[in-house]
Structure formats: structure tokens, C-alpha cells
View 1: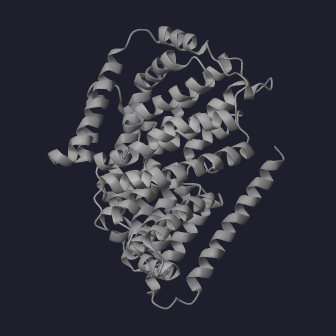
View 2: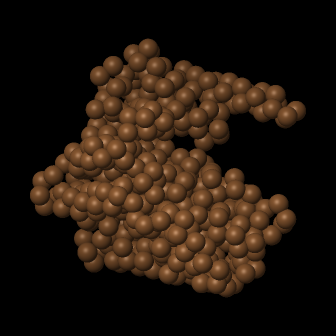
View 3: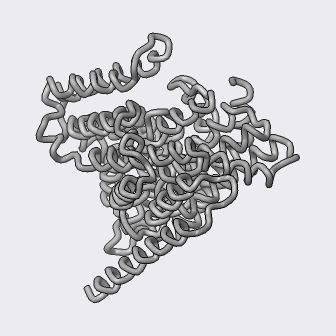
Length: 471
């Protein structure tokens, strides 16, 4: 435990650096073309984001400090600073977090995964496909890819151990490492496929609306469908080639799944209720545009059904600290991002980036901005933080360069998800896999980098052609 004081000291130094960094920007001369208020808000916002990137403090701590500083210095009014808490799409995310708890608690998520493994898990590659398929199937009801990793990881871990692939005896690469890497890569695809599969997605769609881009549940799913389907078949195969398991066949996996299903017994009443609620919610979300339904009200209805049937209880609510902390930091950063734009900062940055791409054809600008957005994720711990910080700026520059707005908006939002495996800390969903012992950080950087490259190439080629065809 001797490293602990050193770790604490390092943390304090990083925090001092953040405060010095923010103060330096704050007291620097305000650049030409900007109002002091916009420059001060930028100093607070960039310091909060940097604190998360360099792990000086958690995103919750960083955001509440940013909120207090912005209000106490008069940079934002109280109405402006707290405006994010009244956004309906943020409430949708929080309610869906609670519903995800019901999926886990009812056992439905686990049963679906085991049923797929029972059918398709006879080889290590087939097992990887089945885990990703299970992820994609349950992802529309999970606004948190971290929550999904919490459902999938115990299954992947059990399959690894029961197949004789363990950490303690040095047999991690027998099967476990491959399955962990595949499941982590799969989360980048499932999160890209559905509007409700990752917390940042609805926020991005809301921000895109400010640019006149209307992204519906259906248009998102249709736009992502072809490239994600291609990557569903391609990604596990590539991992199988570049990071192969020692066991190529897993005839015992279906037996493990059958045994687990026997242990679970017949489908419980709660699973039927959860399944009906799940299917009903997804159907209503898909039809919300045509029928004029509010997505957040649909989510509240689903939660109400689960509470009436005691699948989700007030006792469960007390254990949902993650939902509360997400509501707080997400609302704060969203409000700050919105007012950076309203105060003219985003436009000012966009003008400078526009100067760099002036005269270039819009396809060159489109590809360049997408690649830059993907690579910048090396410096972000949070997918959501990157989207909040950069989405509006990049979209504004693209539109001014003549890139079709809906094409750029969708590509940036898709990239927010498909770049998540570029580093071990690139998504909170990666953490449980990176800490499993089956994967080493260097392996994730290498394999994750290759998978991110493949995701980017497929989306920029086939994905772009598909979007131009359907838009």
C-alpha cells in the first residue's frame, strides 16, 4: 500500500495544475472577437474537461465545481447554469438508467444472452458473435453502455472460467482474452446502432436540432444499420485473426448456457412483464415521430409499469447513485456547452477552423473533420464529454464548408461511439473489461486502435455512401 500516498500526492498536483491552468486562461487577454463572459466560461469549461481527461478528479466533482465557479463569478446566471436540469432528453436518459436496472434485476438480460449462446456458441468465434448479438438485442433499452457491460461481463467471465481460461494459472489467452476484447469492441457497435443505446446519443440529436438537423429514432437506426451490420461480421473475425484465442472450438459453451438456463428455471413472471415493457417501449419510441409521442413520457410510462409490478422498487431507487450523478454532471456540462455556443465562443472557434479548411472541397472537409474527431478521443476519458465539447464546433465548420448537415451530424454522433475502444479508458464501459485481468493495457491500445481504424474506414466509405443514398 506504499504507493497510495504517492498516488494521492500526484492527484493533488494534478488538481493544482488544473486550477493554475484555468486561472491562466481566465486572466489572459480576451482574444479579439470574443466577449469576456464567453472567454471566462471557456476557461471554466475547458478546465473541467481537462480535469477529467488527466484524471485529476471524477467528472461529477469537476462539473459541480465548474457550476459553482460559473455562478459565483457571475459568468452565468442561475437560470442559465441550471437550465440543463430541465431538459427532457436528460430525464429520458435517467429514467432509462432505472429501467435498465429492471432488465438486470428481472433476469431478462441474462436469459437472452444465454439463449443466444446456447444456439450459436459452439466455436470461440461463434461465441464472440453471439455475445455481440445479445448486446445489440438488449441495447435499445440501455442508455448506458456501462450498464450493458455490467450485464455482459459476468456472462463472458463465467464462459471463460468454465472453459478453463483463467487469470490465476496463466491461461487467460486460452479463450477469455479474446472474448473480453470482442465484447468490448461489440459495445462500440451496439452503442452506434440505436439512438437510445448510449447516454450521449439523445444529447447529440438535441444539439443537432439547433442546426436544423432533425434526427429521429428511425433515421438514426436506418443510417447506422448497414455499416454496423458489416462491422458486426467483420470486427470479431479481425480480432480472431490479430488476437486469436488458443481454443478455436468451444463445444462446451452451449452446455454451460443450458445449465445456466436450467438453474434459472422457467421464464419468470417478472421476465415476461419486463420483456413486454421492453418491446412496448421500443415500439413506441420508433413510432414517436409518426404518432407525436414524447419519448421521455414513454420512458416514464415504462418505469411506472415496472414499479406497479414491483420489478423496480423504491429500494432499487436508493441504490441508483449512478443515475443521480449522471443527471447532475450531464446537466451541468450540457448547459455550459449550450451557453458557450450562445455567447459566441463556438462560432469564434468555428471561424478559425473554417479559415484552415477554406477553399477545400466539402468531401475533404468531411473526411478530415471525422478523422480528427476520432483521433482526438485519445485525449478524452468520456465519450459524452468529447461530444459536448466538440460536436457543435465541428458541425458548424462542416456546414459552413458546404458539407450536408445531416450527413456530418450523424457521422460525428456515430464516431462518438465507434471510437470508444481506441484506449482502455476511452469509455466507462471499457473499464470492467480492462480491469478484468484478461486484457493488458498495451493489448487494448494495439487491438483497439486497429478496430477503431476499421470502424472509421467502413463508416467513411460504405457508411457515407449509404447515408447519401437514404438522406
